[in-house]
Image (tube, rainbow, N blue to C red; front, top):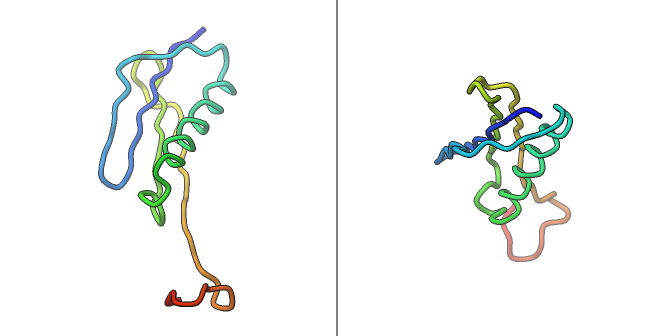
Length: 87
């Protein structure tokens, strides 16, 4: 099993993972990176609206091997905008 670090980046902050996690294969690494990024965004969705938060995965040597970006945007459709909200 190989070691991987998961670093988070958004428009204001970057958080570097200091504790590696072990994974048996690259599919598991990719799934964990996407799951972790979605979980972070789900905790404060308003903070990430119209942003592109990113998770960078480094291998045990510190080399970046994977980048996962989540695009989060909201757009009211003109005919569907609730009363009282400017489109």
